[in-house]
Amino acid sequence: MSKAILLQLIPVAEHPLLETLDQSYERILLPNALSSAELSALAPRVELILTSATTPTPAALIDRLPALKAICSAGVGYDAIDVSYAQQKNILVSNTPDVLNDCVADLAWGLLISTIRKIPQADRFVRQNAWTAHHTFPLSNRVSGKKLGIVGLGRIGDAIAQRGQGFSMQIRYHNRHQRPDVAWTYAETLLELAQWADILLIATVGGESTRHLIDHSILKALGPQGVLINIARGSVVDQDALISALQNGSLGAAGLDVYADEPGVPAALRELDQVVLTPHIASATQETRTTMLELALSNLLSVHSSGRCLTPIPTI
Ligand code: 8YV
Image (tube, rainbow, N blue to C red; front, side, top):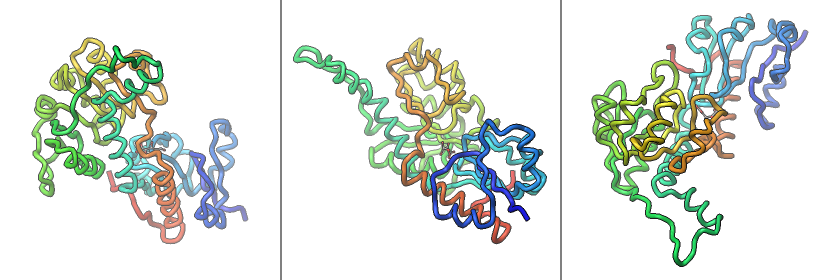
């Protein structure tokens, strides 16, 4: 009898846990090239999906797989997966929380410091051989002691706030609800947080609930000296409003790891010198990506052995 199928929506590096999975599953990498007819032929045997936070896993795909038991993602965000649809169909869905908190928080701080101290611009200045005895790099701004407003104080937001203490930052946050377990000051509204903050750092979840949370009015409240840092999801920011605010000087600067339509980054954004851009790399270190993969594979193995995920996404 043919083995059940583990459908990989993402390519992954070799790993001993894959060898264990291979004992029970035929692993098929679903390339864009797999025709609809080929997928239909495999569909009755597909029990598991391995995906990532940035790989669409829509209801249309779930619908084609009648034997699907679990979708395990190597990533913490799950806005690209139709979780509620899967859960309605009793399909387990898991993500990889916590294991990436440190690297995402590190990158958030890297972007924050790079943006305010203009490190990439200074690097370009040196490489272009512009530094002479009579031409020095323009002054930037101080980081330590600034007012840091965090939008979304989850586990990643916590790790970012903790690092902020080392920089003597004043820290406030806005969440849907105040957290009784943290000492940081809660801002009742996002507008109030943006008015207060020097730096607004977005660490909230993506998806419809937070779409364009950062709009024209929030950017205006942050102001001409304000800095926006986004390591969460591009969808949280109205990207057109952000570009306009940066172009007309009503916002000071931005450091972005995520965009509205990845991997596309509009030319208008790329042309702005006061913006630091990274290609969605917050969790992209050897160590963290290995740990994320291990947790995703452990979730798949757990579904196989016990019918449960180790880190299931709560029912939504
Ligand atoms: C990755 C992410 O980009 O975990 C998330 O939510 O956005 C990132 O860690 C992604 O998982 C890469 O595949």
